Image (cartoon, rainbow, N blue to C red; front, side):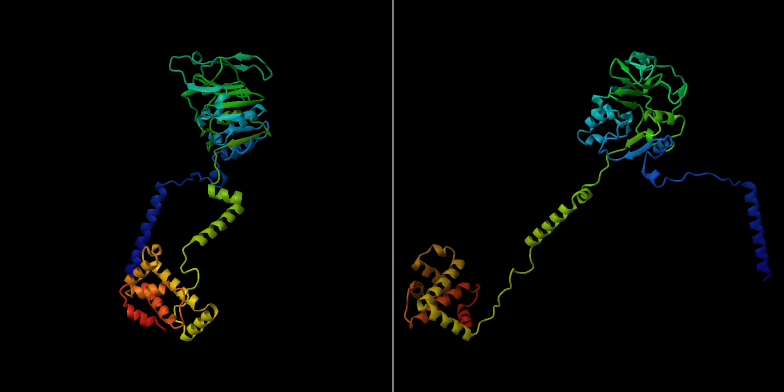
Length: 418
């Protein structure tokens, strides 16, 4: 008993010493850890960008199908070139912009490989090499002094030094340069197609323009030299990226902004069901009926008649009724036809033979006398006394033709005779 108490005391002292050492040599602090995205933030890659636009007073929505054009005067950001899978979509985009729409393009989406390249007056070229002036290898860009001005004021590309981007004209009252942390394609730059292109807004570096907005009809087209993931950043408030994205979307309270992600549509079978369930049901019923009609059955189409022998009385009554109705000659002819049918099935070429030859063929197959068979097979009428002989001979020949090979003919005649 004392030993157990001593062990318990020693263990308690050891635990107290361990706790004291941990308390003296460790420090407990609260460290925030990011939680994984949930709900819409998990499923929507431009969720943070949409929230930024909504905080600026805009009505922002994203789409995975571009079935129609945005409202007049709205903003449309294309983050994929899959919209061209639908025919005539490029013409619809151009008409919408010329009516007053504002289109924004990211250079990383390869929009210049679609039909937009035919009417958007902006192209991408390599950045100037070291020691080469940026304005020596590209057309000069003109920016109007005011929105109402009709003539452009030519500007030079500034030597920005450590500044990432310089806005001309300034955006949202920001002076000097903008520090951008997003995925800008610094190895290339944007230039206009024509020698002197009037632009509404330009973002410049010492390597050239990284963003250009040009008027097209009553609308505008803005091209940013950024990767397609620039607008999918989960932390859009880094550095001064919000100023660049807001300027690209022409952010203002009450404006409508559409963001096109990709062309995601229903699979073929769900689409068929949702678009024409009645037709699918009718075709399914028709197919099931056709398969059932043509399927292999497990039995015959009708019940197999019983193979049991009829009674002698029934045979006698049937024979008497037939004789009374048609006479002896009709009964003889019926028996002759029965023999001919059996011989046609069993003897090759029988149907091409004539009277005497047919009797010879039947005689060889049955072992009966050819002369007697010929007389019975060619008889047209007979007396009451000769009729049983003819009938018995013809029926014996028919049964021998139909009997299985190797079966004794005499035993077959005896077994089948009434």
